[in-house]
Picture 1 (cartoon, rainbow, N blue to C red):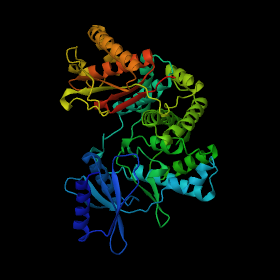
Picture 2 (cartoon, rainbow, N blue to C red; picture 1 turned 45 degrees about the vertical axis):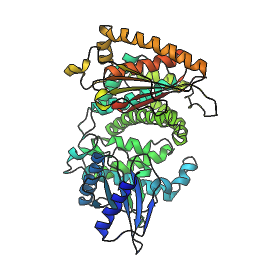
Picture 3 (tube, one colour; picture 1 turned 90 degrees about the vertical axis):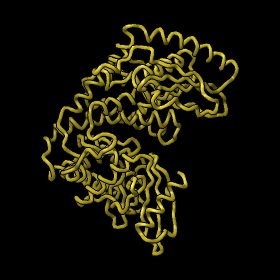
Picture 4 (cartoon, helix red, strand yellow; picture 1 turned 30 degrees about the vertical axis):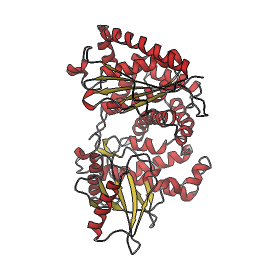
Length: 486
C-alpha cells in the first residue's frame, strides 16, 4: 500500500460522507492483493473501503454487486466508487465469516453441532439464488478475467496442477498421454450448456454471518458464466472442512431442493454423476493451488491442507471410475507415495536457481535477489509457432507446440548450448557455496518458445543436480517450485 492510495480512499470517503472518518483500521489480508479498511464516522457507523490493484477486477466486483443488489440478493451494497475505479466503499457486513462460525466443528474433525449444520444448510440453499436469479439478465462481459468458463480456463487449471503439484511430487507420467486425458476431461466438463452464474470461489470464508444472523456473500468478483456443479464441488469438498459423508449428502439434498424451485434441474442420478466429475476436476485444481502456496510460498495453511485434499481425491477415485486411463494411473501413483513437503529453512544455505520466461515487449524480469541478474537468452531466432493460427491459443507447455518446436530440432540445438553454459555455472556455484542464480528466456510474446526453453532448463537442472528451482512463466501467470532433493 502507498500513502497516495490510502489518501485516495480517504478522499472518496470524505466526498461521499461530507466529513473525514474518525477512525481507520486496516483489516487482515486474505489471499488477494486487495487491501481492506474499516472506516468509522463520529456516530460509530462503519463502512468497508477497498483499494484494488487491478481496475478490471474492481470493475467486475462493482458491476456484479450492483446487479445482485438489484435482484435483492444478500451481497454488500456498493456505496461509492472513485473515478478510476481503483478504490471503492461498500457496506460493512461485520467480521464473522461462516468459516469462523463453524470453527469448532471443523477443528473437531467434522463433528458439527446442530447450529453449525443449520448455518451450512442456509449457505447451500442461498447458493442457487445467486447462480440462477443472479444470472438472469447479467451482462457477463463485465466478468474478470473471462466471461465464461471455457477450454482455455480449464486447461490452465489442469496444467497448474501438473506443474505446481504433480511435477514437484516426483510422480512419473507420460506428458503426451496426460495431455490427451486433460483434453478429454475438458471436453466432458464443457459438454452441457451452462446458463448460470458460477461463483468460482464459493467457500465458507466468503460467506459472512451478519448481526441479524442472516448470511451474505462476498468476493464474487472472479465469477463468470459456467456450470453450477463447480460451486457445489468447491464448497462441499473443501479439504479442511472434513464434512462427514452424511452431512455432505444432506447439504446436497438441500441444494437440489432449493435449486429445483428456481431452475429446471436434471434427474438426480444425472446430477450426482456430473457433480462427481466436477469434484474430480476441482480437487486437481485445488492441489495445484496448494502446491504453489505450500511448496513455493511455504505457507503453512496450504501445506496442512494437502493431506485432506489427497484423502478427498482418493475417495472420489474409489467412488467412480473416470474414463481417463493415464490420468487415473498417474493419480494412483501419486496417492501411493508420500507427497513432498517444502524444504525446511533451517539455516542451511543451498543454491536456488530462478528461471523465467518472458515477453520482450514487457521487459526483462527483475532479479529480486539483489545480485543484479544472470543469463538472458533470446529465443526469437528460433521458429515461431505463434505465427500460425492453430497455435495462437496454446503455450510452450502444450504437446502440439512442443512437437512443432522439436520437429526441426532448431530449438533443441539452441538448448544444447544453454545446457552447457548452465551446467558449468551451476557446478561452479555449488562448489563455491553461492545461493542464487538466475536464467531468463525471452521471445516476442512470452508464450511459446521462451516457455518451452524455461520449462526444459528447469527440469534439466532439477533432474541432474537435485537443486531447488523456482520457475516463473511470467506472461502465463504460472509459478512452479521444484524443491531441493535430499
